[in-house]
Image (cartoon, rainbow, N blue to C red; front, side):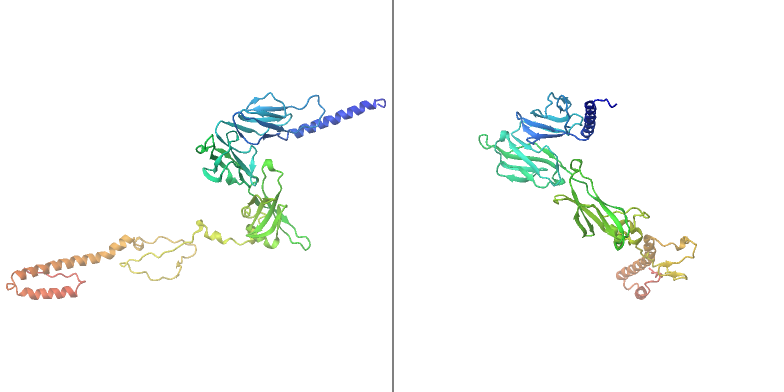
Length: 437
């Protein structure tokens, strides 16, 4: 072993070192996609124009006999070029791939033969970033009386060619865009419209959620409490974006924006955990999102400290499922005598002995329906009215006969006066008077 050539041993060490670098380079390359870019950065061009596609991937520094090639795809068709960048003018979906890496995200290139096109950037636009739109005339002719439209509504007017920029895009800025204008070819034309282009503003990070993560023990003069964490998730393409967090109790800030996503609620305020919420934002505050109120877990959870100390919210008593009960005294019929109070009764109602349930009373004691009550109340009046009508009919007959022959019936006058006085005095009696003819 002592006779081994030192140069051979050094060569073996070098090969082992290069082999380890190759394995590390392969592992790293398999985790990253190459980045495909477009120059100029517009996804719609005029027929006959050419644009440049560039594929930037991970290229490990290895000593190889041939350079690392790049694969290009148009749809599912493999293109013959292996360069890092290519020029294209054919519409379609382009992708690229470097050795040991997955396929890149696609770029869709459109080619138009219209007089007017609306150009949007190829790269995804995220919340808080500027959104730039370009209305372009045929081979850069000047566009006059230029309008930009969003969801069919005009949002900006320019006298001549100009880009429309949204400084800080929001999710509400997503949707179809279009532009219109006139061109001098050679005289000014009628208004022309471009094709509609869909724009999507990507969400930078999700709406944060405030959660209880644990308890902190009291140490010395410092009191214990409950640890809260403001959790959110960044878009995979923006996972390196730094975020700041703030915490609030009701509308009062208990901790201003800071890089820490955790906050400790002091022990005296543990009973009011459901009044806390948090806010996440970028460092420039271009994107800010607030969380809902803290939602505690089920009763009995070791972290649900407010379940035994916090009072029940008053709003729960006014929930739609807990409407206050209303009691209404049933109407009493005039024909039914009122019931006097009985022992063991209070203003709240009848009190039944303990262990006994109330039973249904006899049918005679059942309250009458409103229709039955009305019928029972009106029946005596109807009978009386019929009797009075019969009496009146008899009196009228006597009057008619007396008018015809006043001398022939002198005794009827006394009967008529007696009957009239009886009618006026005894209205409520069922008696009738017989009229002799």
